[in-house]
Image (cartoon, rainbow, N blue to C red; front, side):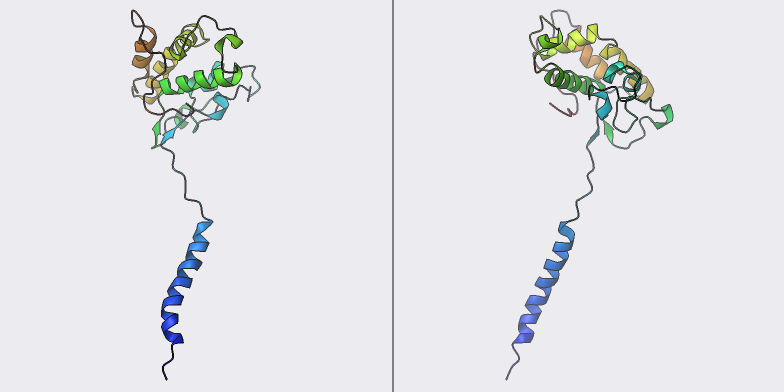
Length: 182
């Protein structure tokens, strides 16, 4: 008489082994590798994180280096800037994100609720903030280009949107490489 249990063992054992290994690995999350280094949370949270009286992009730490691999509102040392092998979100995209995020969060979706009137679309609002902010966006992206020793196209994008005779004709903000929020 033939022992049939050995035949089943040949099929069942690999299946059980597969289930045990699969179950042990299922709780292990894959390591997340971001596509871009994006804006540091302290640079858009509308909070004075370092108690110096300045918030977000009024704060020198965010003006000098706004990226998540830096120190946020606390100034990031020069030697600690632009050290990642991962691509950085462009300065323009950071400001496009920041503009839309702050209008959505701080102004309940309407620029007029933050005292900004006579703007009809995202581009007009972005250009208004560039022209009337404590620091202009185009100035900051120029400084970042000098620090990183590379031109990511941000300065030209801002010029094309805000300073072209007759206007850009756009009503929504385009994206250069990556938008964190919108």
